[in-house]
Length: 184
Image 1 (tube, rainbow, N blue to C red):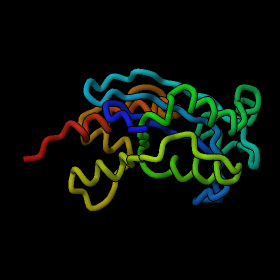
Image 2: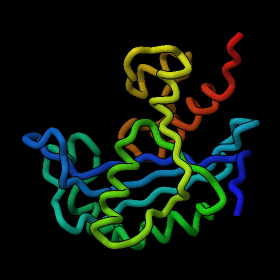
Image 3: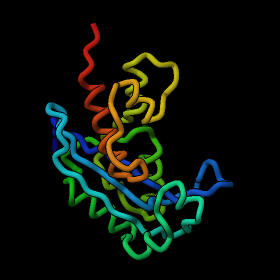
Image 4: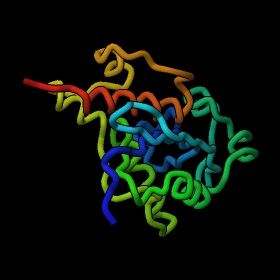
């Protein structure tokens, strides 16, 4: 099956985190947001988000401060990781599209967690790192954070910064910006 190159899924995650563990190697997805970007029009055609129940870790006060998600909220409103994978596949028909995120964190986190659960990642094989692409197109020596990149592109962050879906949508707008740049 060929990939539809007129649209791309852009995803973002929030994860468990701890003040004393800067690399967060045991982090788990606790929220995922994704949207389907029409490359030509920059319109978001579909969006979805869900909370995810952590299985191997807990959400402490520090993590709640960073993500806006409490352990109670994840337990009450979240779904298990495997259900999240099925949800994303169904919502976006992920085999038809490439996918992207701002930076490599979401990709690595999802791959690591899928490996722990012995399942395939819920997205297609083709992945675009928007953070790297933005630095490459702008000839930056180092990559910049999403908020700085939006500022450079004269775009404003839309929505609550703690929500994964809003991060995905803003990353999608930035991806459209990058794909629209014409260098001479």
